[in-house]
Length: 139
Image (cartoon, rainbow, N blue to C red):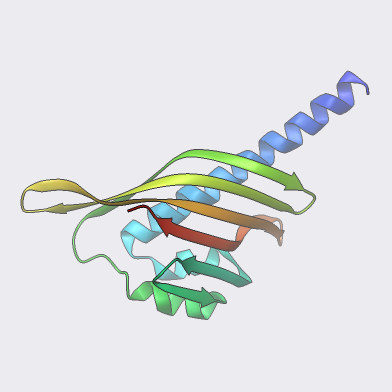
């Protein structure tokens, strides 16, 4: 294999990783701001958002409606960390991330839960969007 083809492959994988990171960050920002239309648009039209033990929403309309029930009533912050893109094949990528959810109350910011995202993203209309996002919470 030539260095040029190796460099091109590395550049392509880096571009996918950056796009995956951007989708994950945009999701957290939209969720914390209660922008359910933006959350829905981060998914493919037939995308699935599964919140283990809580609900599963299939399709953008269901995702938009379902996430409306999670609209913030006080300041909140989803921190996503340790994201690893676990595979990239053509127009699909998978990733795993840790999450911590904070809310601000009368006594300040407090961790409400920690968990994990398991994501499958697809290239849809030139943009990497969630095909499936599974959120699990750690006890």
